[in-house]
Each structure stands twice: as C-alpha cells, then as structure tokens.
Image (cartoon, rainbow, N blue to C red; front, top):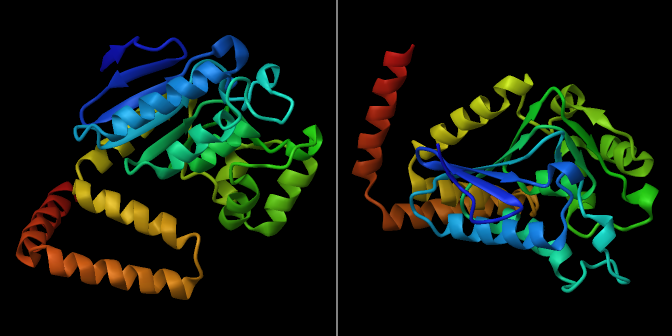
Amino acid sequence: MASSSKFETVRVERGAGFVEVTMYRPEKLNALNPQLQVELGQVLHELDADPAVKAIILTGAGRAFTAGIDLKHIGPSLGMEGDQDNALRVFRIIDDIQTPVIGAINGFAVTGGMEIALACDILVASTEARFADTHCLIGVIPGAGLSQKLSRIIGMPRAMYMSLTGAYITAEQAYDYGLVSHVVSPAALMPTAREIAAAIAGAHGETVHAVKALIKAGSRETLGDALRRETREHDRWKAENNAAEAGARSARVFTRGREQN
C-alpha cells in the first residue's frame, strides 16, 4: 500500500485498483470539522476522477468511524462556520460519486457519522462498531437523508426506534437489521474491506458504475418506475455494446468459478 500525507485530517493509501481513505482526527473521534469536511470532499472528488481507482474504502482512525458534525464548529443556523453548505456537501459527494464506496465501520458511527455510513454503498462493521441517531436528543432535524434512508434499509419500526430514542445498536444488531453486509473482528475489518474492494476492481468498470447508479436511482422510486428504468438502461446497453464481448467475459467468469470450486 502506497500512502500519501497531502492532507492533515485525511490519510490516503493506495492498493491495487482501490484506495483507502481514513478520516484522521482520532483525538476528536473523527468529528467532522470544516477542515475534515473540505479535505474529505476534495479527496473523494479526486479519486472519483481517477480511472485507476475502481473502489474506495472509507474508515476512521482510532475508536470511531466518525462521531458526526463537530459541534464546536456549528454556526447560528446549524451550518458549519465559514460555509453554511459544508454540513451537507460531503454527504452528497459520497452519495453521488460513481466509484463504489465501502464503509469500514471501525467504531462509533453516530448521527452525522451514521449519515456518512448511509451514504456509502457497502458497509462492513467491526464487532466494536456502534450506530446511533441522536438527532432527536440534540433537537436537530436530519438534513443529509438519514430520516428517509434508514427506514428504507432496516424498516420503519426499527428506524423509528433508533431515531426517536437515540438508542445505540451493536454491529451484530446492525447486521440483523440489514444495515451492514459483514460483521468481523477488529483485526479482520480492513482485510475484509480490501477483499471486497479487490473483487469490485476485478469487475467490468463501466458496468459497475452503471449498476451502482441504477440501484441508487431505483431505491428512490416506486418498484414500477425502477423496473422501467432498468428496462431503459438494459435497452440502451444493448444498443451501445457488443453482446459477443459480454459473452466472452461470461465464459471467463464461468471458467474461473469452476476452477475456484
């Protein structure tokens, strides 16, 4: 892994086809102050524009993934000091970039930190991970999608329980709820995230981007609209691509599967 120290609050390490991005304010539980938000957004934009980067792993240093917005830097209208849009920009960047983002949840993912997690495409959790939505305890209405995304992922009763009470849930509960795809030991967290990133990097890049966009767009629509969207995208793909090339890739995948089993 090749590392970079271009930024103060973000650490970047490059692997084979993927990049690890670590939020680095461990003494503050990686709370999102203006500098971390700006640097994280800049890193993600740069990586998304790099054709060599097929997947991004996002994690936190120390005991937390991120504890969310750094309350010391909240302005009078609940925006970040110096830029009222900063509080939402980084959430939207993670949500909108075409490169798949794997959230490696190493510890606390609380309120804004949970919104960062929900913006990721795949979540892998350490057994030390803890999730909570404390907006109601603080007295703030969510603004980065948590109130809508959470219920769609884990169901309304569980989302109501988490959001209205501010209760923390464990990694195992998050897995049972369908919030995370894997729960592993702390030592296995990054190796597992790297395995997933490497698998994505080995897939057909343009199709990965298209399918990610299709799944995300469909999640915001009714099932009927989403199915029609899929049909349109499939028809467009058939018009623009050589089916014989896909057939050759399919044969290679089938051969590899037989060899592995």
